Image 1 (cartoon, helix red, strand yellow):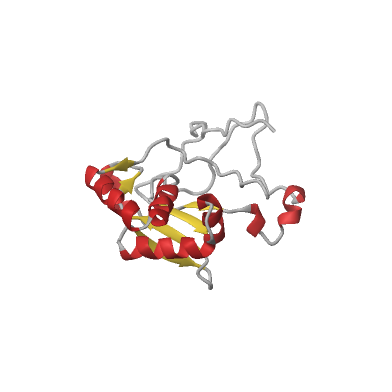
Image 2: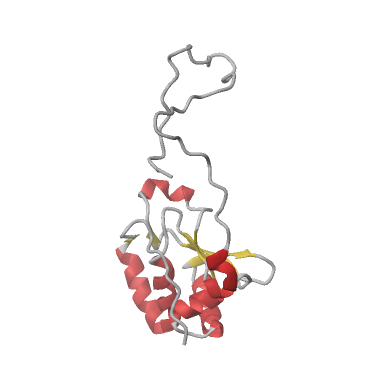
Length: 181
């Protein structure tokens, strides 16, 4: 048996729920324990936008269940208005699962209107076609970094009036990345 993939924890350490959602969740446990379990797995991974992108195979690994069990649980959650499912790709096995923001959310309540459509993406190395080469892939192109003593200077003509270009010698010092190469 292979080790479970390392899943990065969400940036924050909490999600918010309403008491009524907990009462409904308790009923969901009686109706479909696997659906309630999948709901917890997804909710634990949402961030500001209440969506998680994950394959059904990876979700099955996380739930320690078969993919068919996960599919049935997702149908229960969708039909019960717990989640919305947005298909990614042609075959429907990778989806964005958007948690109903009346159940749980991970941002300020007044930002809920922004909940569609950024997502946390969970990608299992086992599902990648180049999985045998992942450790030997070349690094992605990196943006140039400043060397000691260099400064970032804006360039270009600026926006049309009322904006104006910077005065010579008074260009702002742009923030640095803080990274030394």
